[in-house]
Image: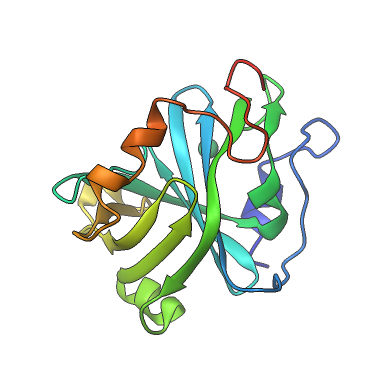
Length: 186
Ligand code: MN
């Protein structure tokens, strides 16, 4: 049921993306950040929870400066298999464009993650190749014109994983953490 919306939007005869099954991965909770050159370039931030990837589209990518707040628009759950998807979605298909696995690793919630998301504030720690340390996702108050959209803020909390030692240094490289390829090479 959780993946109904994901499947409804896609034609798996035409896109190389996985159709996926809801399941649980072994060895901890995964997270992935995918750089996606769709009609607008954005980063997809995904956290494994209850057999699916909870997903947010982050237009500017995760900021590693503790003072920076990145808009994160909640989108449909994706299958766990999606965490390994890197490739090109054909033009004309949903989300057509290149997808790179920009970062990947495991994450740990502080407390009950499902409850925290329902309540609109999740504190967690990332153990990625580019992103590390403590982060918060907080749901923004719903405005009339935004009804039906779930806007969140993704915030880096101050710790040793912030700006100086984090993503910034890697951002210059801007290559896939699984294949080492650039967007053009994918
Ligand atoms: Mn996307």
